Amino acid sequence: MWPFLLLCAFPQDTAQPQLTAEDLRVAARVIGLEFTEAEAAQMLPDVAERLEELAELRVPASRSTGVAPALVFDPLVPGVKLNVRMPHEKAEREPWPVVERPADPMDLLSMDLRDLTELVRTQRVTSVELTELALERLAQVDTHLHCVISTTRERALEQARAMDAELERGRWRGFLHGIPYGVKDLFAAKGAPTTWGAKAYEHQVIDADSEVVRRLESAGAVLIAKTSVGALAWGDIWFGAKTRNPWNLEEGSSGSSAGSASAVSAGALPFAIGTETLGSIISPCVQCAVTGLRPTFGRVPRTGAIVLAWSMDKVGPICRSADDAGLILEVLVGPDGQDPSALDRPLVRPFDLGRVRARIGYPKGTLKAGTPLHDLLQELEDLGHQLVEVEIPSGPTGGMLLTLGAEAAASFDAFTRDGLDDQLVVQKRFAWPNLFRHARLIPAVEYINAQRARTQLCQAMDEVLQSVDLIVHPSFAADLLSITNLTGHPTLVTSFASDDDGKPGSICFTGRLYDEGTLLNVVRAWQDASDHRRKPPLEWLDVQPTDRGR
Image 1 (tube, helix red, strand yellow):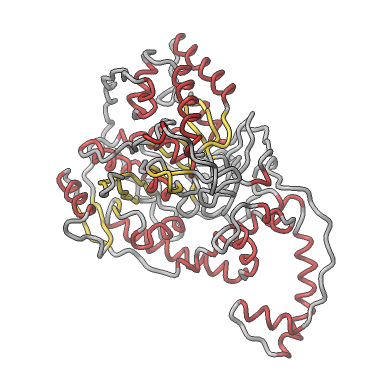
Image 2 (cartoon, helix red, strand yellow):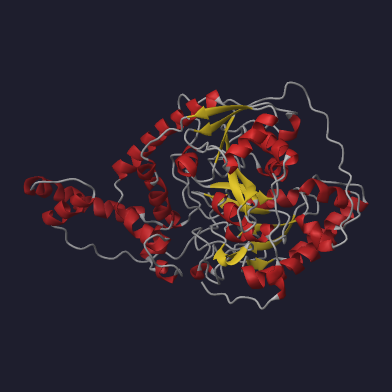
């Protein structure tokens, strides 16, 4: 899919060790089978022959994470219905907001996109000014947060000047015109390293823009930074440091979209791009108290980004509000002819739906009096929504998640075989090096069975979401993080309420497949009616920076 993402040189094959029947019996026990001596002896010639066949599969093309398998996951499995809420009538265009320029220019970077756009569109703020402010603030916070791997200063200022010149000529590209942003350093961008957060690729330069960067630039957005990512998209530790949480510098920002969430939370970027395979947007947004949208699987093409799991990776915005997420999503969606998972499905703009009264489900057993969720449901009911308790399907999600292990190990086959896994900073049980190794022992038969179980899970979730428009739930409740990453359903996470320390908690909203419009519309109306967003205190900017330790 992306021939420029060749991982490394192809080494010479080494001689295979001589197998014995007893080796096969021991290996069988690892996967839960028992063979007799006679059965193992009968299998031996075929297994030895297969080792030779497997060696032939290890060709240079297989060493590019961009070469996708012939089998492509589509969340619309048999029996699952495409049920997208459509507007009954064309909504009128919203009036431009009345916006005053803040007294402190740095406050511009913390504004919602619609307000910030109005200042840029009317030329009360220039793109160059915003870009320079963002670069300055990023430099300030990065000494504490370690949220940036590289900046793209020259490219950013050149593009910002071009966006200002276009406005002078009367051309306005849309809501992202002249707005600075950051992209998780899994995406290729001309003129900057693409490190994937791993020491082995610290100096890797890919002379091409990923599709996400290309689409954002076409919409007028100004790329100013490659934000930090946990090594090979795991956690918040990369080759240079541990990315920190602006609310508490003693904590990491979680990951793997670590820098994107941290920088947006700290008011250094109006928005940033993240990715998720199993929590990498949701978790850092929970930790850093910002809004993140993980769209339906296949909504946004991944061309030009590292691949972990071809059937699970998703791309989405990290920003300040559901309204911002909708404005960004509209730019990103649609097929590109390169990523086979990116399909042409209807996208209803949330601001075309008008006022929506929805049936909103909440997981059975989560509603308790006096809890933040109880108060939230009351707020939603006051807005005219109907609340319904729903039973979240259960299943062997742990077994199904061997999908991630098997696909990631295949994507980084050469990385492991060539010993580059030893260069990753984190070497422990729950980290990539160990997972890449033990995933080699996942039988192909069990991988296929996991996909069959996944089909049933998709059907079960669809049945629930045919009875309601969306589900509201605590961020990590009812195994929904694993379930929805397997089924491909869209989820939006945002800050909600506050704990005793003043840090907001979080809440998630999960919608129907390809029905991000309804999801964003409902959350936007709730946020407008009862804004729970908070800014982290940044007193640490005035103290000595922390070291870059882990």
